[in-house]
Amino acid sequence: MAQIIDGKAIAKKVRDEVATAAARFTAERGRQPGLEVVLVGEDPASVVYTRNKEKAALESGVRGKLHKLPASTSEAELLALIDRLNRDDTVDGILVQLPLPKPIRDQAVLDAIDPRKDVDGFHPTNAGLLAVGRGGLVPCTPSGVMRLLAENGTKLEGARAVVVGRSNIVGKPMAQLLLAANATVTIAHSKTRDLAAVCREADVLVAAVGRAKMIKRDWVKAGAVVIDVGMNRDEVGKLCGDVDYADVFEVAEAITPVPGGVGPMTIACLLENTMKAAAARAGG
Ligand code: GUN
Image: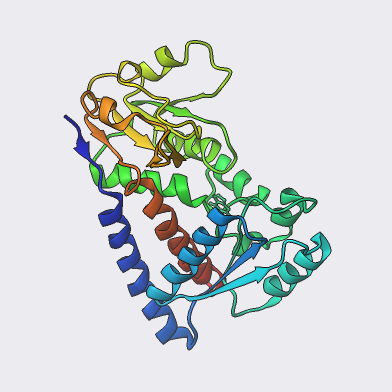
């Protein structure tokens, strides 16, 4: 029987911290920290995500603004908006929701965001700073996972950590953060030979593959801490993670549920990054 890591409660704590910092920033600077969220097109998941991001910002005393652009927006038009937001001193964070409709190139757009305002941490400058251990803005989901592990009291130094998934958004930065915390880190992926055996070595297992209930009980070492980044629909359309929760619950020491685990942390860490960006731009 596993301890349930309550992402909702921990995210609330982070958001309260952000609200305190945002109130102080506003009092000292005479303006609120500002987050601009850009949505192009009407991908249903993206519509929900961006609405939630704007709402969460407003609830924490961050000036959140959602720009809704039609799917027909050209790359040049989107780049022009980013250029305007880059130059606007009242804007601390810029987030462009992915995926972008074709033929806009994700990479060209992400590269155009001022790295100091890149609250997603997706700009190559921020990815590089993370890789060499020199700060910068860190992607929100892996950053949220680190906070969940810290709040759970999970010891990372010397631990075997396995990250399943190698995306730029989650897998790679997750591995960098675990490494920086002195874990011994393996990045596994769809081409990994005997994936189950690799997962079984983990003291800390982070699943970020996007395949419903892929990780079963016999993939998990007794007493492991299991973090589920997945957000999938099961065979009856119910939200589920990459981990077979009911199955793995029996062997893990601690586990995050889906929903209510990593998900709420991503938005909380986005607001935290916005505060970090605001403070850094204001000179610390
Ligand atoms: N699409 C799915 N996840 C994310 C995210 O964390 N940030 C952005 N910008 N787009 C996403």
